[in-house]
Image: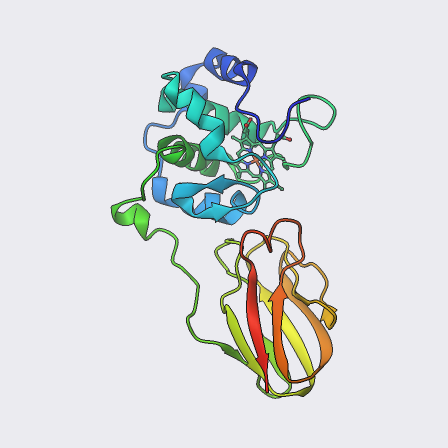
Length: 237
Ligand code: HEC
């Protein structure tokens, strides 16, 4: 059986090689759009160092393509593999888990995403120039502060596995804790022993709690998101 950390299979690569160049290649891919789209649509399930994504549902894409790059497979081949995977993710019971949805992005976006992944996978280092700032960090160094009985802690709108605020403050007493989520990546907000909102891909997850003074950890309970760092510290006074 093939684990999700397995490297890209040689069958996948052979299939991509067999495809005609023009069907998988766009000579002017937009790497900036590709990076933004990768973070928004792929990063919640895949680690890709240059994109700063930490998803652990699918294979780590740096590891997946390291061997291919060492073996001298060019970026065009890797682009083909990624493009094909976006169109035809492996189906449950055949080669894979059936977890990755098909056609998460349209054809043009897939060209851009594939070109970006091919360029940066296993490359190490950091993106440079415009690519370095393609995905604006939504992280705030300010705490989220409760107002009018509501403590609102948004999910990172870019799709990264994080809350915008990694600290929060609220007074003791009854409160609604909410997490507005515009990212499209399913998230919830939870505090052990206090409550948990529903998982929402878009919308607001919230729950009511009666806070006592102390410190609490809020986190997203979707598999792998806490491990990727989607958490923060709430101080109640
Ligand atoms: C919901 C989780 C999820 C999302 C979102 C997702 N993937 Fe995947 N991906 C997986 C899983 C799981 C696999 C393992 C093979 C399988 O089961 O299909 C996989 C496999 C892959 C592979 C093959 C790697 C290998 O080692 O064979 C590539 C390339 C890939 N994904 C790229 C992408 C790209 C690009 C996107 C965004 C357009 C994306 N994935 C979005 C879960 C996801």
